[in-house]
Length: 257
Ligand SMILES: [Zn+2]
Image (tube, rainbow, N blue to C red; front, side):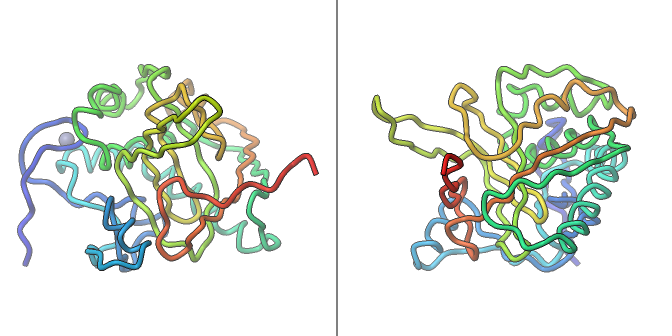
């Protein structure tokens, strides 16, 4: 018998008992045991050092949301995400073997776009500090199910396809330093990888991240309205399949060749 931990809900900010939020939702292929390495432990594991991990019997996730927010997002947004994740996973099984950098076109005819992207934002709220959730306006955006009120200049959200056997990845804001012609630039981003999808939330949108398909136009969709969608999604493999490192993908094949 376990006692629910107490803390601040990562969406509404209220203090109280927290419930387990599955990331991704349990019905979206997330009900197996998961070994989850986070933050610096993921990097230690990658280097072959001793690293702590959480053995999550319930699947991947954390005690991050109050009952109310868990129930509301689970009712309003999660079912759409689950359906699309299963559809895409099913078509990937029957498709030819994919190579890193391949782009797969998905045609979705009844796609409730706003619910889908709100579920993605719900998952990221569990990974972000509450102060960041509030700064980005994700709290109000999620608490009002029909809201389109979001400042899209503050972030960039991208999606990709991830291999079946890749380790799951769930990290809060991480700094990645890139060398450029003029010096260095630092991307701060959250990376969430869970078959069949991966998502990148870039908190430094002035620096464009070259991988993935933008989801930014989904934020303008009408709640409960279904759209036809032609979705080009890129299949990305990481430099390490067992312990994926945030934002570390194999180099893309040169398209000019
Ligand atoms: Zn809450």
